[in-house]
Length: 347
Image 1 (cartoon, one colour):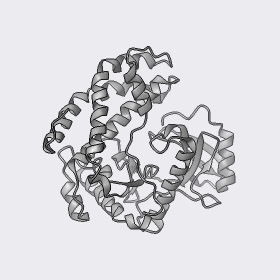
Image 2 (tube, rainbow, N blue to C red; image 1 turned 60 degrees about the vertical axis):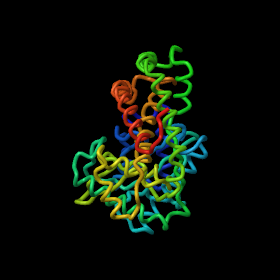
Image 3 (cartoon, helix red, strand yellow; image 1 turned 90 degrees about the vertical axis):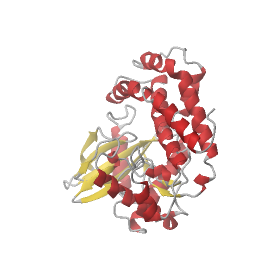
Image 4 (cartoon, rainbow, N blue to C red; image 1 turned 120 degrees about the vertical axis):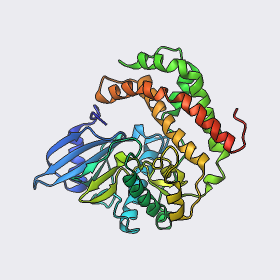
């Protein structure tokens, strides 16, 4: 996130860090990085740096339908990451530092939680497809090791729910695409951009639901998945690679991870299948790529339908919206080919 939450009281955050982890900041600097959480660098009185993450419980509806369910799910996810590092021996897992009570996160207020991670002096990679084949193979190998560690965390890991964020707002828009939005500086411009594509978006949601239903049986085999192993969640630190952002970890089909690593022509599938002995489903790979696409669009709709300000984050979503909409025709073609391959007549 490129700007801090306007309703978070810094003194409350500092008090939670002091009480929970014994950290009293000499400085607390906001970092405009990431896309799902807010981050700070905390430097304590001894000059040691720590990475502080604040999660918005009202903005993670893919975890649960209430702030309490989101908090519980987030806690389970972080505890799973700790178990993967400490019990499964996966040293590429960047898990949180436990607070004094042994828990990985603490409440800041009704809306926000805080967690603390080791500060990494390393190099991260840009968001998008894996442009470097060697990096892609290395991350795929880490994912193979992760999936094969499923028995160790099966009893403690959360179950991934196959849904996308912002679906309620997407449905509200599709029900009244011509209704004016007056919720902020970019609201009506965003709605005007979206409105001509309402029918195509409605069809895409139907295609998503149809794929969810038609792949239900093949998705029954679950492994422990990271959820978002794209290049921006990979860091090179002292010659080794680490996977960060484990709030999305959960039991799900292996395609959930693999879909974000292999190329558009599915280079990498054979490497995964040989290492794990797990046969992947092209239809489920398509499903998870579509989920990611709908998640982006629905999240933008939620942002602009509701009260918002002119911030670096809202400007970023405004500027990227047209590019997302340009991909709609490609999805119609891709889904048609998927249904053909499965012997199903597209609706």
